[in-house]
Image 1 (cartoon, rainbow, N blue to C red):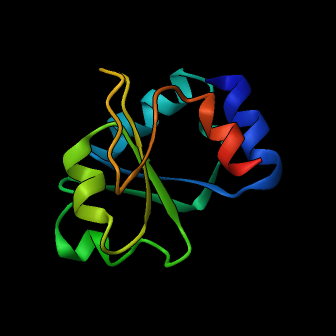
Image 2 (image 1 turned 90 degrees about the vertical axis):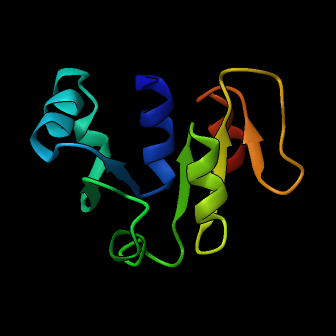
Length: 109
């Protein structure tokens, strides 16, 4: 994933739209060595990211990549979304679907 993020960051502004404990999430990014790929201005971490006040913070031109179908399905009305389905070969006819992080390079680079 480090190589993919480095390639994506060359031509895109990367952000995070996540849920959970803010400090824990930041520690995970640092421990994984990937925090530097994300623009601090676009890091949004909420206890519950599907609440309206959290969704309203997503920039209009953003594309959200998530592995949870219910998240991309919910957000498809307010943002560009990509479902990263690592569980099966299933695709959604209405939602851009990929099966590995590497496939993002084909979309965004």
